[in-house]
Amino acid sequence: MLKERIITALILLPIVLWCVFGAQGSNAFMAFAGALVLVGAWEWTALMKVVNPVGRAAFVALVAAGVVAMSLPALASLRTPLYAASAVFWLIAVRMVIWYPDSARWWAKGIVLLPMGLILLVPAWSGLVGLHQVSPWWLMYLFLLVWGADTGAYFTGRAFGKRKLAPAVSPGKTIEGMLGGLALTTVIMLAVGFYRELPLIRFVAFGGLSVLTVFASVLGDLLESMVKRQAGVKDSGNIFPGHGGALDRIDSLTAAAPVFALGWLLSGGF
Image (cartoon, rainbow, N blue to C red; front, side):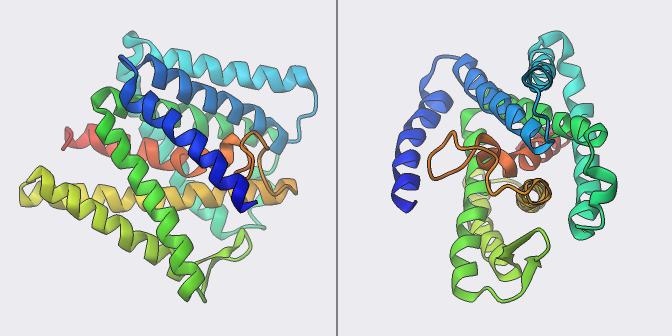
């Protein structure tokens, strides 16, 4: 398993970096992010326990329509309210995760999971693409926050983890691990903040948004774990050997990307 994870990561990393930095314009990254989101949409239908291929394809088409709509310059003004709607959903998701499994009685049904999938995937794609259009480096900063939170949590949790973060949802995650991830991302945030030579008020706002984004990334991971647990599966798919499915790779970004994008737009950028 570890060997598969390493090989898959070594293959994916250059592709991601080329799409972010090497390709001319933003089309390559838009397509790459779109492909991940659409595969994630297909996997989401399995978590909804939709078995009819036509029904599954219809949901993917619905997500694709949302992605296309948010790529149109004429609808660019809808990005902020879209991110705001996503942020409201993630506030509700906190309750869903804390109250699981009791909360499943009202969200574990197709009529709820369908719009939930849309609010997970479409704002995430729009947030990622929007940040890339601002600057590939700001998109990479978002990636570093998410990767740093995950890496710090993994090693700190293994070394010091005792208190469970959300035992009913993901028994392996600990409070100590989350704090370790927050510590590592704080170092990243401080380095970028000082490099940007931000004034004190802007620096505080930048730090606050970064911390909020890290917590959002943790919540995105927990929510997908909760839905997978309710569906009785370990991974959302197997498209990435050793890493699971597309949703398993972007679960943290489904929350982190729209939250960071919303903060960026409201603050006017950093």
